[in-house]
Length: 339
Image 1 (cartoon, helix red, strand yellow):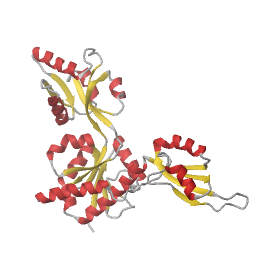
Image 2 (cartoon, rainbow, N blue to C red; image 1 turned 90 degrees about the vertical axis):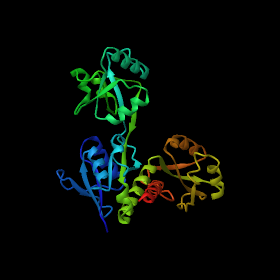
Image 3 (cartoon, rainbow, N blue to C red; image 1 turned 180 degrees about the vertical axis):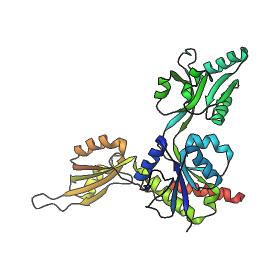
Image 4 (cartoon, rainbow, N blue to C red; image 1 turned 120 degrees about the vertical axis):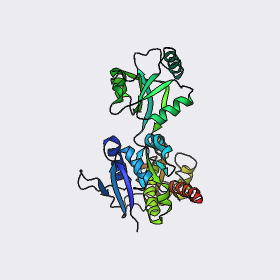
């Protein structure tokens, strides 16, 4: 059976969050030595994990030296024109951040995209272009062109971009921001309409490698199934409730008429065989509801006589079929027609 190679971010917040996310999804990475750059996932045999910088995760998937990878959607979008073999399999809903345009706080006349456009024209009249320091040249250029702003120059920069305006080698920056705190600490602000891209962690794959190896595709399916079911489970809670009634049908009628109490398909109702000192006619109810409905559901259950309400957070909720894997298969089928 072919081994599947999965590249993960090697360090930083995205690296830590990726390890935690996979562990919670039942895909804990076993790395016996922190200095090692390879690891395994014991829950699924046949997977080799390698650790790379986020941008190198994309490049390794792109050149086919790894089959799958987790990186930021911002990285994927910045480099997507380099290859049509790298595809986004799923967004993982962590590592949320934004690629933003930020200007010095002292620019009190710049509070919108229109203000920025006017400023670039003013700079042009003075014989120079506004300078933007960024690691995201492609995304920044395309976004500004799309907004009708063409009078600017992009400055390559590494390290902390927030210092660029203060040091004088750029007028403003385009960079990733998660909370905005670092921007504020460096006296920068994001003006209205200044968000270029919303990003999160995403699972990417090499279309050709997956298309040509059924073993790797099956291993990918195993990974995707667990991730999708784990992400689904975050939206719901499972309630087990005891309630007294004349019959299962009568108890069911109390629940089915209310959308917040009827569960995903309908309530599970089981007759309880009471202890000797307890009266009869008790039923155990199991329902799965959206997490946001929990408090309202609790109140309604109490009003109809429910007690012993236990709330559990499921680890997985599997659908009849994996929608994520079905999307992946369709993507591979379309590409295979070209081959």
